[in-house]
Amino acid sequence: MTDELLYANQWNTSAQYFYEKGYYSWMEEKLTSFNTVLEIGCGTGYSTLALVEKGHQVIAIEKNMDCITQAKKLLSDKGYSKQNVIFIEGDIAEDDIRNDLINRFEFDVVICWN
Image (cartoon, rainbow, N blue to C red; front, side, top):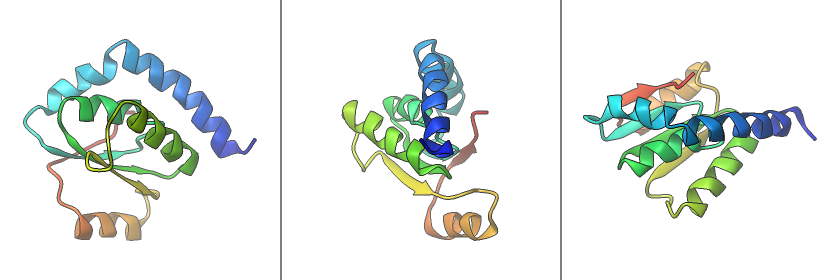
């Protein structure tokens, strides 16, 4: 098992707990006046799920492709499509990634859960 997959699996356990306990929903309530959210580090998708459940459009950036794979599956399993979320593999700390996001997308707010 790769380090990336190990991380994704471990993070999934924590993220599912935060989702089920309502922590992501509580934080989402602070974003009600924003439509399109740039989510830095979507992990395995539970925070993203909380956003789309409340009607947000999400641009989710994550540097771990195993996390993105799990996030896409979670959103698909819950009935959300590619129209709700754009997943981007990349590290927000890299200038090229940040510049590309700014040039390609419009968003109302930027969040990073942790």
